Amino acid sequence: MRVLVTGGAGFLGSHMCRALLGRGHRVLAMDNLLTGRMETIHDLLDHRDFAFRKWDVSLPYEVEADVIFNMASAASPRKYQIDPVHTMRTNVMGADHALRVAQTCGAVMIQASTSEVYGDPDCHPQPETCLGQIDPASPRACYTEGKRAAETLCFDYQRKHSTRVKVARLFNTYGPAMAIDDGRVVSNFLVAALRSAPLTLHGDGAQTRSFCYVSDTVAAMLALMESGDAQTGPYNIGNPGEISMRDLAEKIRDLTGSQSPLVNEPPVTDDPQRRCPDISRAEADLNWAPRVSLEDGLRHTLEDIRTRLAKLEGQGTGS
Ligand code: NAD
Ligand code: UDP
Image (cartoon, rainbow, N blue to C red):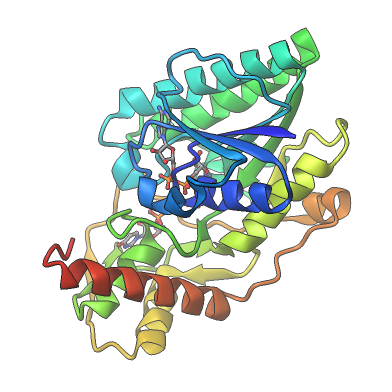
């Protein structure tokens, strides 16, 4: 099939491109390189079934495709808040443009939504029926409300135009190829531990997340692509193993053998306090469940970050 991956030079998008090529599909990665890097896909550039187009998805585009993975959007809170207006446009207009292409080609549009649609949830763990609690005026809302509006557009296109849509609500995913300066917690802690720098906890570190290794998330996205049109979701995709940020910091310190201190910084605005997916819907409909333990996933991610840091620091550009 001809597959468009928007955000294809990002962390998750690059893994998706590689997995799709591995299954014999033709892949077009579209990315404006805002948080993505050509380095994540450099090994794919010579592949005969791979093409890259530099484009900002908040602007309309035309593509022939059978499947669209709409993954373009900065995902790190630190990054998506730099230009919140652009983040909102990317998520809302980017979804609209992808849906138009899907409608025109009869393609299926698979939306990379997020657990952030639950905000600071009042139900725990979160099933897809949890409606979420979000302040639309929050500095996080450019992303959370952008993703919520994108889901609304998906289901409105389906109701109004019979467009084929599928929505995956991804919970925190981590793994090799995360940018060194991404700003999300796993890469921040690994990089700090390797540099013997402090691991900074926002607030008291009691807040929790549930981390899913990238190969498990990719497997779920592929299962969703291969599912029937009735499987529209939304589907929670994540690993239900829940951990506090303090315990994560300690685990990473143990894993790296680092002596880095843990330091507390002021909490960030509207930081969700608990996050854990109920994945029973995805397990039942997609016959999918995560397989990689946090320990194994962190070990793979550590090796990747260690190698890239050594290269960077060898070049004298240790950032
Ligand atoms: P990432 O920042 O590594 O990748 C995002 C990619 O989108 C980058 O390559 C970036 O350059 C590109 N992009 C951003 N704005 C764009 C625009 N206007 N036009 C074209 N390209 C643009 O983040 P990621 O973790 O790989 O996330 C990928 C997708 O998955 C995002 O949509 C994100 O919201 C979603 N998601 C990720 C996670 C996670 O934990 N990794 C969790 C939930 C949802
Ligand atoms: N966090 C932290 N230190 C860091 C980066 C993040 O304590 O260096 C916290 C952050 O406040 C949040 C959790 O770790 O409670 C996960 O943050 P991340 O940015 O990875 O993703 P989020 O789930 O908030 O989008």
